Length: 455
Image (tube, rainbow, N blue to C red; front, side, top):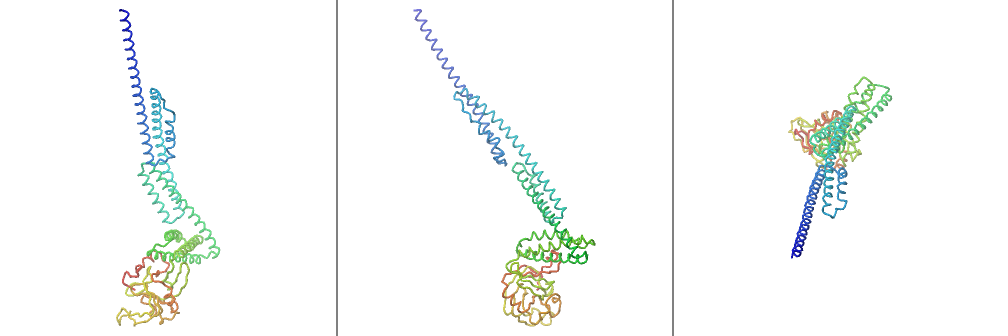
């Protein structure tokens, strides 16, 4: 009996031990899975944070190349195989989490480094641009160039002050670099022009045997020619953008910096002023020719002359007689006008009553090309000898018109046949004065409607 009881007791003990062992194994497994999950979750959290930081960095302007030191390491994080035994997975994930955390720290440092470099680059390029602008100013670059460059650099400074991200600073640095490059190009160009002027001045002194009066006269003529060409461009530019108008403004600004030398009692200084006047007069005139429309008629009040242009070529030119300047009761208007209509023949009837000093009898002409709404036109004038056309005739009683432009009969017929309705007609002072002064004398809009009712 005792033996039986002992046997039963041993079986019970064995069963209990077995249950305990099974239960313990299950517990270990549950613990291992829990630790693994916690380690995996910690790694995933850090990895998600790193990926979010990388996306934010990209949005702030960090390029793929910028971020490569981080992304290349991130891509190798899971290159080793995960252990199959659960307890072995915990250190695996812990290692990944630790490496990811280090990458996060490295990313922060990398961002700070690149941002600092971008900030320094803006300052560097801005300083370079500032130096070049100063050099351009010292070399007597045009006011337009200097002011334009300075305005752009001011824009860079505002962008720099408002910058927060790498993208902002890099954009500002690129703008500053562009200003610096353009400023350096201006300096190079202006210095080259200065050297040309000095060389040309030496030739002028030699050619004119140092005759100061002759040199000064040539210089003043160069200034007048430049002013006239630039004024024609300014007139045409009021109606429609003229190609090269900005370049002309810069050339005239450069000329202005030299023109004062013409009056110098030092023959070499005067020669430099003259050389500059001639060089820029040629430049401006060439721009005028290059920008001419298909057809245009240019009339100089001072010279009492008309030039008909077909593109850059003069196809007809002749002395004319106009009226006085287009103010008061009658006169020839100044402005960027156009051919409004043509008639053959045409009877002019005086708008003034008989007894008025301006009255004239009904007058028939053969060829007319009208360019103002008040009846100013190119036309023949059989009562005026062709020999009397030209400078001064606009002030001579019996010769001067009431606003029209007299041409010889054959030239009036030619103009009638050649000019197209809508063709530009520029009537301008042509007195060699400044562009601003010649612009101020415009009396009509581009539709030929006088501002003051004259014409």
